[in-house]
Amino acid sequence: MHLADTSSFVKSKKYGFIYDNFIGASKQINDERDSWTVFFRECRLEPQIRMAERYFDSNCRKRFLKLLDKLPELLIEPKKPSLLHGDLWSGNYIVGNDGKAWLIDPAVYVGHAEADLAMTELFGHFSSEFYNAYASINPIDSGYKDRRDLYNLYHLLNHLNLFGDTYLSAVMSILFNYT
Image (cartoon, rainbow, N blue to C red; front, side):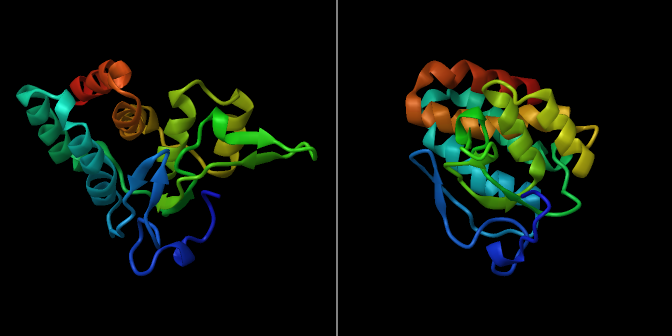
């Protein structure tokens, strides 16, 4: 999936999708951008931060602005855009009667493969065999672990917006780690 040709999933730019969709019950904005960092900022983090604003005091809001401004230093542009599942965690794959793995409940878009990998680690990990097999066909950048939590901030903000303040401490922890 991450190695697939993405040209039919975007109209004219590299990142985004041909239409908006949903991540859980939240609208997922997929406006196309030429830069992965700009897309992640404008279409992933900013909308979720705005929706969660009631949870943050003025200090947190300043930290979020600082984080958003630092994104070009923290994220890398991928060598190649990837088709992403968008909500790739252990609850969204099943094993069929044929013994093959099947992905379900996508929040698909074109982005950086690291965003999907990060999600596989957010609510428990996939097996080591999965990561070894993945890396054998699509090598994982050595700096990925430094960016993983930043990618998961999007999902944690979404969970904060959908399910409430149970996720606030995880959001704050990531915010404070990067600012």
